[in-house]
Image 1 (cartoon, rainbow, N blue to C red):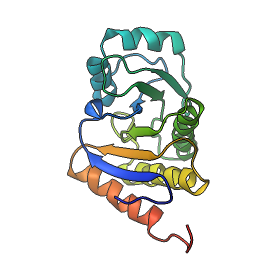
Image 2: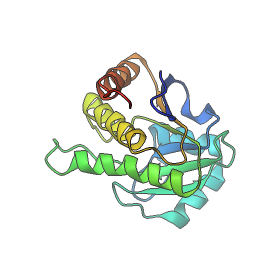
Image 3: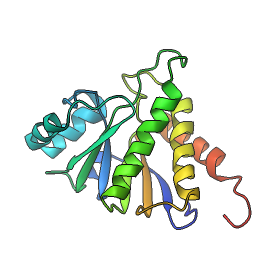
Image 4: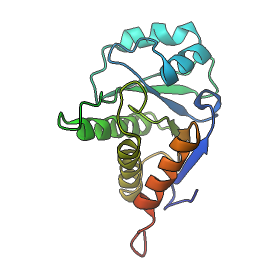
Length: 183
């Protein structure tokens, strides 16, 4: 899309398991066990070593993140984060989802990673409304970029399908369009 500051923020419609980045993010469950959707696809592509590694890192409470190797993936690492299950928005879901993104950025910086790719965390079986989730995802990216970033130079939001891609493009416009002069 564009390059705000020194960190490129992109929206790419692709299979996240095929991206050549330092880390892809797995929308995980608290037990870090192989699940369905994106989580299942990541586990299948990475190979059985990923599940073994995950079990040594579990549990991972909602809003937190853990790092493993990427094994057979093109990505060198997988950051596993647990987004909230949607219960109507009055059980702290927005704060927990924002925390999940911040945890991923913190792990990326702690391990000196330059690129990261996110799926649409919590929007699948966890039921988080797509537009609300994408607004949080892009707001957290903007916060990271505006704070000067860390080690990341590329943030990718990996989408699947027209509806998800549109939601991310709309959220990108809302988060990054009205940038003050000099930013």
